[in-house]
Amino acid sequence: MVYKILIIDDEATIRRLLSVLLKRNGHEVLEAADGETGVETANNHQPDIILLDIMMPRVDGFETLRRLRANPNTAEIPVIFVSAKSQVEDRVEGLRLGADDYVVKPADPTELMMRIEAVMNRSRRQIRRRRAATHALVGVRGGVGTSTVIVNLGSFLQREASRRCWSICIWPSALSPTSWICCRPPIPRPIWQPSRRRPSTKKQCNAACSFTTPA
Image (cartoon, rainbow, N blue to C red; front, side):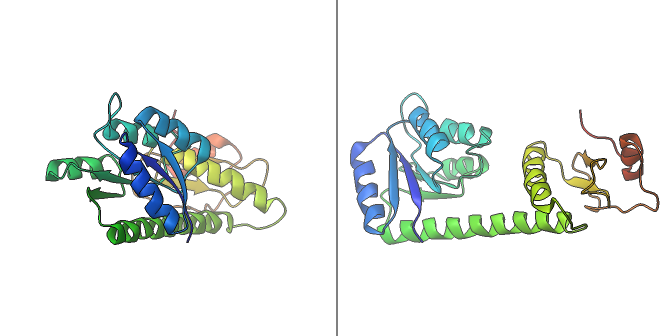
């Protein structure tokens, strides 16, 4: 498949070599010479994947990744570190911060292309799983306005994921104007808990789910 790939590296020679390799394989390439520009470019152009150097002036690769993951618009973009730092500690730190892979320079062209493809395949699987979960929740009740509910519910789940909200309670009246979505911190519970009696207030909804919505 063809991807839009952002290269963030302060060395012009490395950017040029990577750009030639990627374009030769049919991909669209964006470039940034430092971390700050890279974060701005990622936010504005929404690349499919980012190749990120670590040793850069002012804002290094680790801090760049932190900023990417902290921004909802770029948090889900896959990132591969491509760095000359080969110590185990550096690779572990990069993965701990949320990198999807780590390649040591000089990277073998074939290996790099395969790693990009592998990361993108994992990313697509994760997207499919999230979409399937969203459709399963909305599928409890069908009817008029289902498409709108899917969009709104998807946005809600994305926001709540950043708050580590694991349990969602959607009442059978999910498509009615008087329905509620209750959310709780990470304590394992069923995703949907039906009730014998339909709650008439949000307070009853929270009580029936045995938790309250977060502040």
